[in-house]
Length: 329
Image (tube, rainbow, N blue to C red):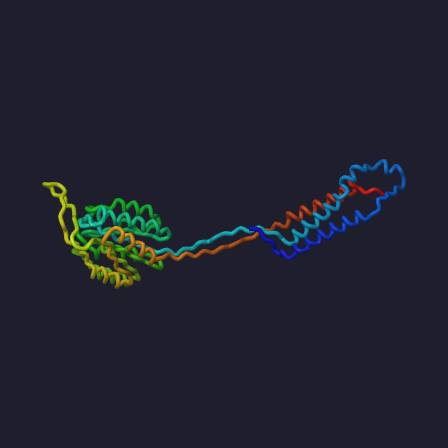
């Protein structure tokens, strides 16, 4: 980026065409008669040399004036720097990994669909710290809050049914997520809890855990996943191998809605993979990260370049005028 500190001075450059006009008019208006005091002076002069460059001194003087005017206008170059400050959100994903998450009413099943959609959600939260909690019959922290989204996505890929004793301890899952966020100093703290059933075990109930979250200024979004009616669930039988059983979908929507409302969040119901992806997109839009961008431009002076060029032209004019292009006496 270039600029002039005082561009108004550049208007003086309009004088130069006037000077050229006056110079040309004066030269052509003169008489062609040349008088010499003696023949020896004429013999010593080289008429061809001086005639060829007879306008050079004037050209150097005009060029020096032009670059001096440019120097006085103070040309500057600027470097623009950008400072980006972000106020990220701390988010903990609490994911149900109970055996019912193998139900195939979402393709290919509830757990795999949840893993893929959650990974896409994580990839889009570049400025936020994200943690991961898994729960079934009990709950534990899979990953503490981190800015490294690749860690979370890798752990989401590794999640599977059977990694924890079976059951659905929704309250314990939420309480563990709240504990992870308790030490956070972020302005906004969020839990996204996903389950496909109702709490049937655990020392802390979902509503009690929600009250804990509300007291600590945390917001909880709850997602109930599963179609309505009957879902097909694979079961490993030691005698006949894998078989399928029909299971009534039993999402405790009233409790999940109460948990969300207690903390100022929202409850969502995902009946297929597309609606699950849409829910995570909505949560992503609701919890935006504040980004402040400030632009600074610092300028450096360039006037010394045209100033130096002008001085060189002046010295050349004087030097050549006294030697090579010296006028005849």
